Each structure stands twice: as C-alpha cells, then as structure tokens.
Image (cartoon, rainbow over all chains, first blue to last red):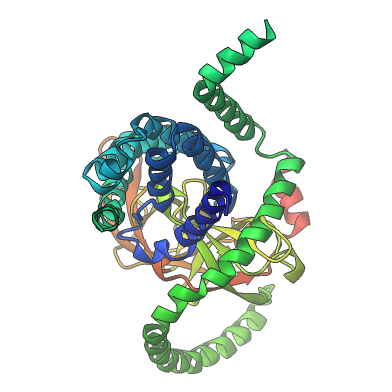
Length: 163
Length: 274
C-alpha cells in the first residue's frame, strides 16, 4: 500500500481516537493531544513537508469538529506550525534514535509549548479569560500530559528497534 | 527564467508550503461565517459524526457497568422526586389559575447520544447524533437530567455540535432560585462558572441554586445551571465574584436532551426594537 494512503488512514484513526476515546482520559478537563504526538512522529519519520500537511489537514478537521466559535482555521494554523518546527528534527539516519529515545517527548514538549502559546494567544482574543492564567492552567498541563503520553510510543519504538 | 523560479521553489519548498498553509488558515479564520464555509462544515460534520458514532462504542462499553449502577441509584431517587413534584405541579396549576397567570408551556425534548467530544485547548464541545433531520436548530438548548449543558452551535443532517457551558463564548442570563437575583453565567476557566454582574449588596448565599432566567432569548427559564460554591467581594468593584459549580458533570456526558425550543419571534423582535 502506498505510504500516503497509510499516513492518511492512520491520521484519521488518530483523529477519531482523539475525539471519542481520549476525552475519557481527561484530568480536570486536560487531555493529551494525540494528534500533536502523531504530527511530531510524522515529522521525525518523514520530514517537514509531510508533517505540515498532516498538521494542516488534521487541524482543519479538529476545527470543524469543535466549530461554532468563529475559529475555523486556528488548529490548522497552529498544527501546521507545529509540523514545521518538529520537521527540523528530521534526519534520515537518526529516525530510530529519535523515536525510541528521550528526544521524542522532549521535542514534543518544545513543539507543544509553542503550539499552545500561539493557540491561546489567538483563541482568547475578545475573551474574559487571561492569556497568562490560561497558559498556566491549561497550556502547560496539556503539554506535560501530552509529553507523558508520548512516553508510551517511545518505549514501543525502543522495543521495536531493539528486536 | 522559469527553470530558475522552479529551482527556487524546490529549494525552499518547505517555506513555500508553510506560507501557503498559513495563508489558507488565515483566510478561513477571516471568512468563518460565510454560507460556503458553513455548508462545508456541515458536510464534514456529517462524515466525521458517522465515523465517531462507530468508534464511540468502545469507551461506552467500558463505562456501561458503572453507568448501570449510577442509573439504578438515580432511578430510585427520581421516582421519589417525581411523586413529590406531581403534588407540587398540581398545587402550582391551582395557584396559577387563582392568580390568572400565563402558564409556561412544557418543552418537548429530543434524546441524543454523545458520539464525540473536544475538550482540548478550551474548546469544550460535544458532537451528538441528532441533526437537522430530527428538528434540531442552531442555538437550541441542550440539557441533561442534572441541568443545562450548552447550546447547539453547528448542525448537519444527522449530527450537531454542542457548545458546552464551559466555553468562553457562552453567556446565559440566570437568576438565584431563592432570592430571584439576576446575573449572567459565564465561564472564566477551570471547572466552575461565574455568576457575574451581581452587585455586592444583593442576596446570594453559598448553596443557592442558579437557574436560567426569563431574560434569555435562547434558553427557556427555570433550567438548573448549578449551585453557588463561594463568593468574594472584589476590592473597589461594585459587583461581587460568585463562583458556581455546574450541575452537569461535563466529563461524563453520554446522553443529553435537546430542548426543541425556539425563541418567540415576536418577543425577539420587541427585545431588539430600538
């Protein structure tokens, strides 16, 4: 099966899991961002172009699924940027090393922080919520939860590449 | 010349692609409320809702046992409450007749299953398996047995997205059930709501029940919103800060009811008359 088809199929699966199963893992309304983990994986394994495209399309679908607030395009924007930034880590000879080592969650922390900062900066325009408080209350905990969740695939990759 | 341009594009393809996606995203952000965008959104929601409906079975299966237990307990409590309410209702009808007041019609409700949810990045919305074909319209209130959950924000033929009360754009005209003090319910982050625009001298106590008021043109009056969990005076401010714990547990939403309520058009017209 062509690589693109597999990537698209897996992207849709992760989007569905994010909107159906992941909300059940919420800790005080903070959930891990599975879509972002997937984008960072695509960035490390396939490069910047694929990661940006995945980020844009998945972000757009997320926007549609949580629409009604005049913010269609916001997740598409922030997740494209996340894919672009994560794509700098792409190195054909170090894919296994990055995916199975601490580089994966560490990169995710950096990308997630930038993603959340930009997201809330735009999202909170015209709102009563304060940007700095929101980042502390939601942005940073979401980053930590997402990075913690990324440890699971990291160990899975470590095991996979060892065998 | 053409080859040179092509070479430049290939060399910097990542940056061109980034610029393209950013421009596209910004255009979407700027043109959110056009009919075309609404139509695309509606079609995408129909596809995504169907897929979510299928995948959503998985978490439901795991929570079924616990849900059964909770429902059995609720059943007992509610049976008792219904008996008491029946008496109160009859008394209420008698009093309404005595006072010759206009009675409030009871609302028809449409049950719906939650097939998807977005609670990340402050976008607290759910997707339900009822849409335009079932008579659901934009801004219809959505409730649970516990109280007000939110309002419909996007619809397709078979599915709808509901903005929950824990959403920065949702405001509800509300009042204290006991003292009839009016205010506005809004979300300011976290798990609680804020009952705003209440002067410091007004009677609001911890434990007071907050319900929707007649002032709202979207939500019918009398729906439970939550309970006052605390209040504090803000130095130098005319209004007090009143925290409200929502009646609805937003993390356990599985079945909701859409109140098939549309605002009285003549009332809206007179409300908006200059």
